[in-house]
Image 1 (tube, helix red, strand yellow):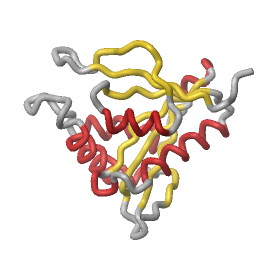
Image 2 (image 1 turned 30 degrees about the horizontal axis):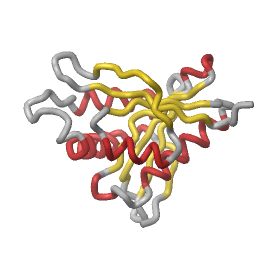
Image 3 (image 1 turned 45 degrees about the vertical axis):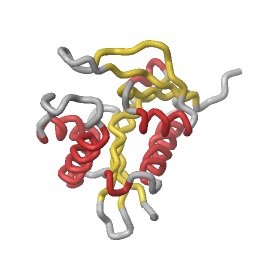
Length: 170
């Protein structure tokens, strides 16, 4: 399947919230208990809004199918630029498009954005038990960085940091 990637716009917000919710519900169902609180649509929208509006240092991208349906999104956050690295966050693809290249296309858009900003390294955080995502990032060259952090107070769910060196070290 062919996907095109473009910078996200504010009018993509509802589609991105829908993709985020469907992807998280399917992808995390084996991680979080069924009765665990799930963020509201407004809480999820608040995570995307700054990047869609071009605020601060974040840029969002969307992947669209051949019929212009948003099937995925991602944010490239350049805020850590003073430390020399960028942050990939919220890479979500609709489950109906899993395994078809939309995630890779979004990933490549973030890498291009960060390279253009002159960043040498990227980081991201992934739930420890999210093996599908972890396998994907490792195939794309990401390396686990020692250490974990608790995701939610009261739940035994943690995440790990991955790094990607985009500029070879001398």
